[in-house]
Length: 250
Image (cartoon, rainbow, N blue to C red; front, side, top):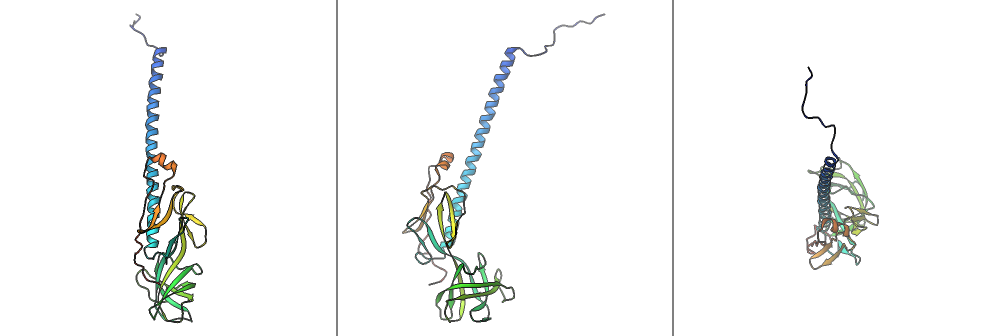
């Protein structure tokens, strides 16, 4: 006996159903794209804000670190074109023994980096209480030169031009300059090339200038960054007390 059935199974969709599915799929895809685009834009804005904050922080830390031990007019100055030229403090050394030969002394060194002959300059505190400028001619790292305290490196240092009085203490400096060039905050050691310290996030109006509060850093954002981040505050002023005490010198 044959078994019957009621109803039937469709093999596909009608044209109307396909159109509805396509419209719904398009709306869903558009919503997903819009959501992803919004999230991507938000992430990009957050990253650019973070990059700008880090760049401004780099400017502040660099300027404050190098200018705080010095005095305006003696250790740093701002040129008419907005460049900050300075004699940056890099470390200090104490004489820790007798001379090995004329002008060669064992020293215990503490600083940001080791001395570099023919690039760094010295201020030498002599036994008569006066500070005198000198040129560093040699540095030799030697752990047996004398006994160093915690964190000190010991070695032999030679310089010229400090006079005949016995030395007691040395302060080491590096001549350089800070500037805003081609969109980045840059540092040039001596007469060398300007090396970027930040990404290219600063506008053409970024510069250094002096006011009665000390040195002022004007940091202008680029037009592209302002459009992306939407931040109308495009200028940050950093002041440094011009009467900040120096660690010693003449």
